[in-house]
Image (cartoon, rainbow over all chains, first blue to last red; front, side, top):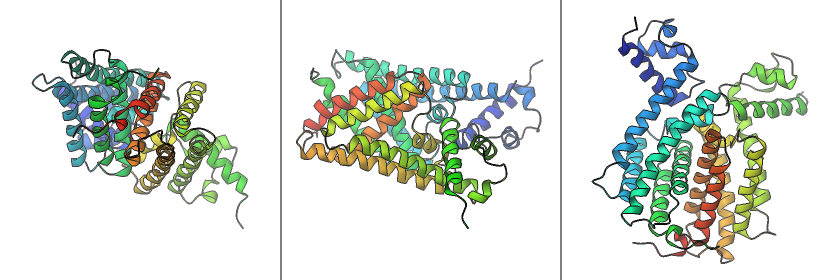
Length: 203
Length: 203
């Protein structure tokens, strides 16, 4: 007999909220259960270990972000480069609402957990690869419709965008201002519209 | 009577090592004292609280990174854009040695602590501003020697570089590969050498 999925889902959702705010190590199981209204001590009825729970949390965040990326970068009714701009506008609005807190949960867990747990690291890496795929597909469409040059290195460019986005979110959290994200958006768009991609390399 | 500075410094150095690897919340005071060979229970003889200790650790990391940035970006014997490349080469060599672990301690603490402690956030923000100043000074020299255009927005460009670097380090930790850093270095140099900075904006 398996437990009702709703209780398990409630623990994951509340756990994800707390971990998004405070990080994995600073969030106690006790606190998650208490704020989900689940009886203390019943955690191990739902999850084998805190580590197994952590894996579920990473997957939860990955699918949440996958949803955002699909909604904006996969929207065929919008030109591909404009989709990237719309994704950035979505992040700006999201972080305006959160008072420049929280950030990207996958970015947060990357820095917190990549070196201390191999299972977590692999799962986070898969989440990052998925985000990169979404960006690559969008850039590929831009290449095919002629808004990016045919010799574009899609994989490297997607990395460049992903790195800038993660760094801008990190800076936003520390500066408690939207300015880093807005600066990044403008630079990314300039880069894709008039940048070195459109010119031959120096050597 | 104040305690001998060497013991205090030993605790900070060992604490910084552990926090660089595991993060602030996952590092116990007990563990720091034990691995510094300092008697248990003597922590509060040296620091008022774990929070005060955390502030010292942030300052320690900031001055460590300030040293690297001064050494590479302040080296007047080297052309300014080459200095940025040399800083990136230094990071590549550092992270090759560490097996793509640890990353930037200020980046790590940004994501871990910015939302949960205002004193930490302000101190980390000061550290970030210092890193940005080093990059801005270097870009300003490049502008003055003609290797960057005179209308360059130095502050935005420094942010763009800082964001890319932090994101690339984050990705490196998760991918356990130097490739993100190497990609970032190439894109940054392309951007500064043949990028949109050298062309009029579209509108």
